[in-house]
Image (cartoon, rainbow, N blue to C red; front, side, top):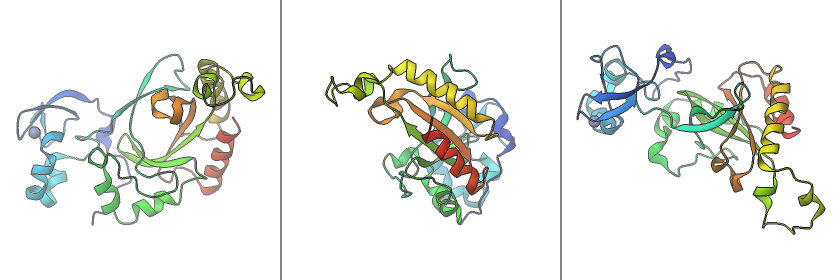
Amino acid sequence: MATATIAPHPDINNPIAPRLKCCCCGERFEGRQFHNQDTGWGLGDCCVEIVKPHADEEMESTYGVPGVHYKLDPVVMVRTIEAPNHRTEWRITQNLSDRWGEINRSDAEHKPLELLECTLGLYDRLRTQMFDEDTFVVRKDAAWGILFEVEFCCIESEAGEVDPNDPWFLKLPGYYEQVTRLINSMKAIAGQFPSVQFAVPEPVHVYRERPAAWAFVAHALLSNEQRMALGHALQAL
Ligand SMILES: [Zn+2]
C-alpha cells in the first residue's frame, strides 16, 4: 500500500510538454519533464502498465508521478469566474465516485482508481468530505478533491421534457442567460471560500446539458462547516 501523498508535487506548476517522447517506445505523449529523465523524454502513458511491474519501488524516482509527469488528468473546457468570457482548460478526472460515495468504475481505464484505492485511507477520507447528493470525488491537476456540481434548468435543457405552456417552463432563462447568472452569483460568494475554484463546465459534461455550478475543493481544504456552507450557498444560487 502506498502512503497518502496529498501535498502537491512541485512540478505541477511546470508547463505541460505536449510532445515528450516515451523512453520505452518512442511515441509522443503529453506530460511534464521529470528530472531523472533526459530532456524531452519521459514515461509515456502508452507504456506505464508495461514498465510498472519491473520498476516496482523505483517507479517514482525513475519516472515521476502519475498525473504530474504522465497520465495527466484529461482536459475539460469550463468558464471560470475569473475569465467568464473565455473557455478555459481544466485538467480534471471526473466521477471517481458517484454522487452517493461509491467508486464509479465506468471508463476505469482512464481513471487513477488503483492509486485512489491503494492509498491507505484516502478514499474514506475523501468520502467524508462529500455533501448531500451534489458532489463527486475527482482529481484535478493531480490533486485529489471533491467537485461540487449543482445543476440548474434553462429553456434548452427542459424543452421537450415538460408541457411547453407550463408557467414554470415559460419563466426559465435561456442557457447563456443562466450561465451568466451563475457566474455572477458564484463571484459574489467566492470571497467566503478562498482557494476554492469555481466554474461552469461545457454543457456536454452535465446531465441533460444543463447549466451547472462547479466548485473544486482540494482534499482537506475546508472544514466540515465550510463545506456545508459552500454546498448550501451553491444550492441557493
Ligand atoms: Zn511508450
